[in-house]
Image (cartoon, rainbow, N blue to C red):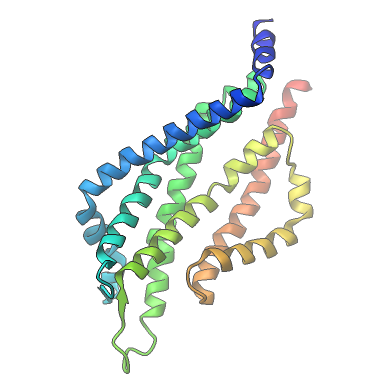
Length: 250
């Protein structure tokens, strides 16, 4: 009875109340990004020289600055993106807290687990891009025309290339958790995912072509391959979530 009353109270929230709740959640998420960006700014030299430039230097390439403001813009981009990556668990938690009132009480109890595993999926995608996609793509690029041209890369172009792949891969790796959540609330079924598998693969290839900052087929394939694999894994996750949701009714 108390749960029903609480659920009823939440339903009575008006549009302005939801708008205020959204504003508060966005503010807290932005505050987390600012906080971690400030920490990233303190370690900016280490992050750029020892972490972000490491894949480039590992294949014998060099970075250069082509514009007077190139270094400043690079530092700003690194600080902001690293802040977003570090704050992602808090961002996901604030997102969950915003949508939780619209769920049933038995669905809200999974909040901690969902935020934890969603964060793990995101960080796994970041690691996959940093350790697999970026080094492989750089090795591929370094084989072209080195006898004729000296291949030096603009630092801002390289950092944008690296960070966009890292962020994109992190978001792509959220697919299994998104699938689990949508199945739990009844918006997705494994049957629908199997039925539209071919459409999904075409969509994945299009997303890979748009999301990757370079037009080469290798980088796009490295980006698309895990997406296709994650889609297949998500079908099994959806099937598992569906069985788990139906089991108490039996």
